[in-house]
Amino acid sequence: MPTTYNVIRRALITEKGLTVKETESTLVFEVDGKATKTEVKQAVELLFKVKVDTVRTANFAGKERRRGKFSGFRPDWKKAYVRLKSGEKMPEYVNNL
Image (cartoon, rainbow, N blue to C red; front, side, top):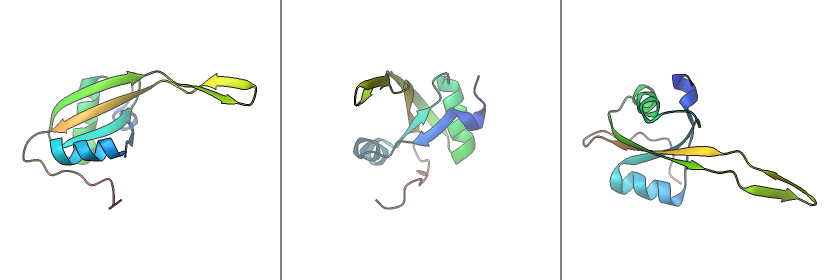
């Protein structure tokens, strides 16, 4: 079971993630693969001091990568979409891209 500070690995800063952040007040994070929705919710509320409405998660299988004749797989990872309650201030973890 991951601790609160190990649940969120990093914020995913992509074009789609920034669009969802602006239009649906939803944050996108890469999270620990064993983290539950409840743990993600508690971690976001503790770290960013906001109220979370819903959490959606998606598991991704690692892709195969090759270096010359050698091949291997990237690790599996988990993404979380965290929607904030209406009226909550959106935390700024990105400075003007």
